[in-house]
Image 1 (cartoon, rainbow, N blue to C red):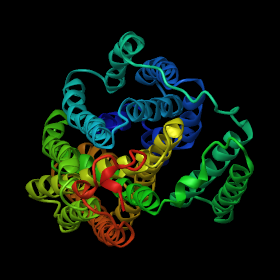
Image 2: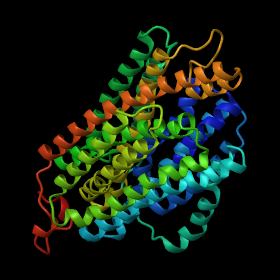
Image 3: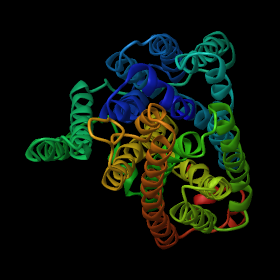
Image 4: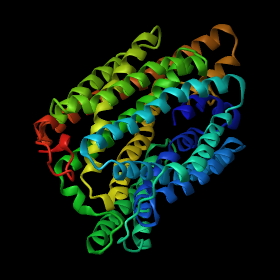
Length: 485
């Protein structure tokens, strides 16, 4: 995901996608993962988590090759969608396997922190390795990074990973699968249509959102009636779990939108190469690694809700710095602000994931993992769609492109248009476009600041817990020590 954001300018130049197509290329992956996570998590409980992991790895490798050699925006969108479906098998399988391998609550908390850290390592390595590839190869090379990793997994997985599945699981309810997709996808379609300039008559996208919500009601009612539901809704009666899910969704929503703007600012406003932009993103990723690993240690001494709230307060400061950013000379402020955003998010993701997974019985580990990942992935994708659209609206409202020019659609288009104009005219066009883009980033930062502060308050109000050290040894491991209330 982090590699793709760096490749956005190169994809724009090579495939010439429209602004809506570019948004679909970026976020269709997250939307498809969010749509299929619940299904795949439940499927892993039934057919075996290791088996599903290996099937998904093979499909992910094939889809990566197709994406690398896509020659049209539609082909790239389709291959990214296939990557999303395959990716939906990977994440709940890995997290469920960890939940089964580590039954002790404290060990599981550390293992999940390491698992979250691997995402941070990917964020850190992605821009650097991907940026280096983009220096010397075409944009499709960033997708080929997936292939050797999937090959290693296919070889090592059967030898190193144990198999787990629920022997008493019922049949997969295909009607529930269809209902879950029919609920999520129309809502996504409606939101994206509403974000377009040429959305056409508003009733169509609004109707799509309403249809999705109505189908969602039928999905919930069916789950309550089934003996073996696609997702056990009783999990949501746990207040800390429900709070963690909501907080992770909104946190990832603002993180997804922020990352989109930060990567473009580095390349298109500051004018850095992909490799140098990736290196400037490295401090934030390293900060996320540190805070993710420290979170279980701090939560053993301090109430986890306070650790999470403190982290969110740090993130709010980072977002505020981005809200006050200028289009000129803002590199240091951007890097520091983004570092604070990521550092403050580590505790929420590490401890929140542990709360969700630790609240489920072992036979439902796949479903609980899928719920956790659905929250974060849907949040990330919605952040790109909603905040990306907010920034685009600000850009188009503040920047007037020359007659007949496509520079008014995106900053990348303005950069390309400026290169075609003589000296002062090109510089003036580029400066105006960069100011407009930064204005969009400022608004996204301001919105994110408010949301993050509200999340911190909500976590403190809704999750009443105590440090793990206060829980006596021998307590029931079905409830993680750090989340005991």
